[in-house]
Amino acid sequence: MIKGLSWLSTLKSAKVNRENTTGLCVGCLSPNAINGLCGPCRADLPVNRWHCRCCALPLAHSGDSHLCGDCLKSPPPFDRSLIPWRYQYPIDNMISRYKYSRQHKFARPLIAGLSGHLEHALQNGNYAKPHLLIPSPMHPARRRTRGFNQARDIAEQVGEALNIPVGAGVVRRVRRVQAQRGLGREARLANLEGVFEVCTQVPERVAIVDDVVTTGATMRVLARALRDAGAQDIQIWALARTPG
Image (cartoon, rainbow, N blue to C red; front, side, top):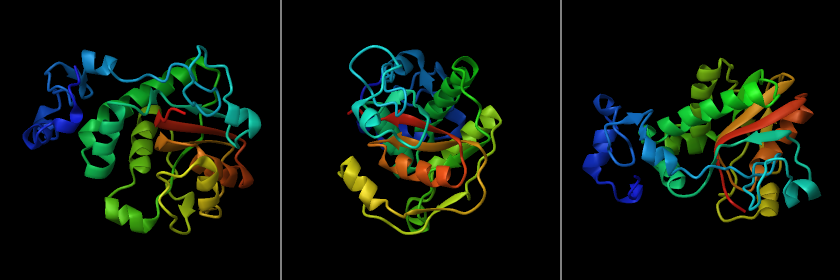
């Protein structure tokens, strides 16, 4: 079982990040891992079972055909969100290690799980397959600091698994913004006003890809820019969704 990813030692971190230990579980170092997680650790992941059918906000009651209050009050400019997990322990630690410390081994099981979740949804949910995956763009200065854009990394792996091209240059950030962490949805929307520019033509069906959807403000602004540029069916694909 996952016993606290935050206290894994430097030695253990090195072991699970070497190519010759790809069979080890990143949570408990069990040798019986598939795509980086053993069965018990995989069972510990917080599944986003009950959620808003549009923005995937986790809900307290059963069913996935309901709309949350925000989507009822202010329908977003995207059509649906496919997000398999809630942004809670241990998902939050795994994504943080991947995103801020470049420990890609922690993302490998999540990206593989997302690909499987999406494949099942596209086959059984009457959803049209997107023509193009669009990673949530990162300002060049932030990308240089972090070393990579995790949204693009996720999109490229999912795109390869599902045979969907990735349009990393379709949208760009034209300015840096105040850090979104700690801001509410309205403040985030104001902070993001005019931040995205669509650089090329977009196809009818697209999916925006990111690691975590928090308030949904970034997805709203980005989806609006894509819809204004001609996209008709817009999906949001991400690893995790924060609870309300």
